[in-house]
Image (cartoon, rainbow over all chains, first blue to last red; front, side, top):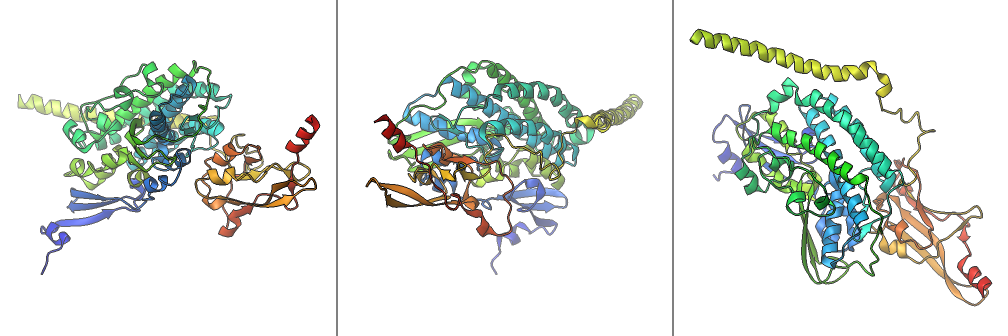
Amino acid sequence: MEETIVDINLKDKEEYVINMGPQHPSTHGVLRFETCLQGEKVKWIVPHCGYIHRGIEKMSEKLTYPQMIHLTDRMDYLSAHINNEAVALCVEKAMEVEVSDRVKYIRTILAELTRIASHQLWWSAFGMDLGALTTFFYGLRDREKILDIFEETTGSRLTQSYITPGGLMHDVHPNFQKKVKEFCKYFRTKLPEYDELLTGNVIFRERTIGIGYMSKEDAIDFGVTGPSGRGSGFHCDIRKIEPYSAYPKVNFNEITFTEGDTYHRYLVRIKEMWESLSIIEQLVDNIPQGPIMLELKAIKAPKGDFYQRVETARGELGVYIVSDGAPQPARIHFRTPNFSNLFIINKISAGHKIADLVAISGSLDLVIPDIDR
Amino acid sequence: MALLKTFKDIGNYFREIAEGVASLIRGMKVTGRYFVKPSEIVTQKYPENRAELKMFDNFKGELVLLHNDKNQHRCDACYSCERKCPNGSIEVISSRVTGPDGRTKRVLDKYVYHLDSCTFCGLCVEACDQDALAFSQEFEHAVFDKSTLIKVLNHPGSTAEPKEEEHKETKE
């Protein structure tokens, strides 16, 4: 009789295969971890993705570049502005045009606000996954302020479709600068609460310190970027390596730790919120005047292939456009951060308890629609 | 020596307990502060506050064709919104009508809007040269029947607002 894969894997009768997901609350989306347990310990994990595959890359081939923007919102919906910006920058690079300083400043402020909002939601959900329900309310309370700023300017709270090739859809709301400054002042008083509530908490520390160790070599091998990679000492911040938009004009630190455990991936994000605040404060007071949209006859990339990468809240997002000179891309590919970040999970969670798997997958900050796109 | 180490271990053990309890108290202090200060609570009572709940002016609710008080809209059936829409949510149905001056022009018959497939990207409003389209403040889109999401935006009996031709004539 032929042996099936399950039979081979289950030679040891102590082993037990269990599916975590696709409807598990702590995967925050439809992702299935096929987990082999030995007692309570995780032996191996196979992540199965594809439950929310929508074919965004294929759909984009029939749409013009400005029309395509709204689909990128729906990949990594927590960094919608940054996804829009990635496509916009790639198309601008292909057309060899440069947007005005005003657009660059506004794009950067919006991107950093997005990063803060994303880390706030991640902090809230991460605390909740580990049993601290309180964090969810505190995180969402502060995130609401950012969403209000987005809503006032762009008209939407989550999928803004605001940054478009050639500039912005329309100018920012007159209250924008005032509101952003108010938010920075407000959030500087609220961010220490995050540390008091969760970072110092003994239960949280016991569940995260030393759990899910990822070495720098593993991070590079698997292409783990963003805060997850920087927690292991991998210098992968695209804002530093290849500065785009207004990042060359600001001073900020790339947060890295060498410990590489769940707790330090957490700390990277907390410290990044402080850095983002400082970036916003450097830019918000001196937004220059200038046109919001470039006067372009037609938005189409010339024949050739073009690549642009940006730093989203989760890591490196690359946009690769192959163009045959038409207003639509001939082929477009997104190198999404979550897809690369996901597959390290087998390596870093093997040997840990199943309860720690929730902490480890939470610390990778996975957004499932970005994996499948 | 071993005894000293044991004492040290016992000391560490109790210190860890004390630090743990202190960290919990520190966290409880934050939550306790809001417990005695209800003025800092930010939640709203929806749907009780429906009357005073106001969206921002730019809010992208649902697409509307603007009508003036004479039941006239500004749409000249140029199809630019339909062409710009990435999801095919807009169908403009028009016909050619010959006016009394002998010139044929396009007249809007029906402006069909599929709210169910709309992603609120705002390209239609940007594309409109006549400023005929806008987003309303409506955000309660939930319905029991899917077919009610397909809407006709031009009001019954509405006509196109006459403007360009009249201006030209006055200039001449």
